[in-house]
Length: 72
Ligand SMILES: [Zn+2]
Image (tube, rainbow, N blue to C red; front, top):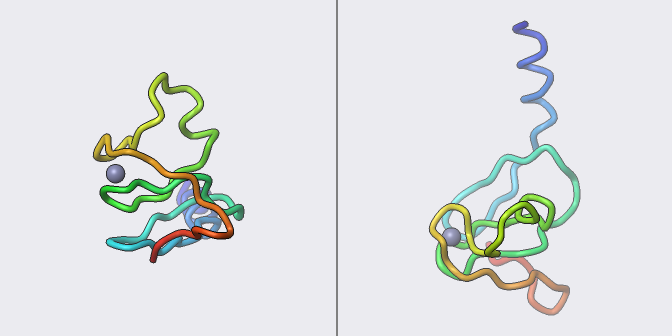
């Protein structure tokens, strides 16, 4: 039991963003960033939601691109 918790924690990767750090169990870059609280989001996390808004503050999201990378 303890081991499985440690295992899943060790897979988490910190993603630093302006205003905080998100711990995620994935290696790909985020698809969106909240314009209000700057939290990063991944497309598949939001797919199940009807409205594509920040699930933390309900702020507007913008696409993260090479030209406009994640704000940190
Ligand atoms: Zn937000």
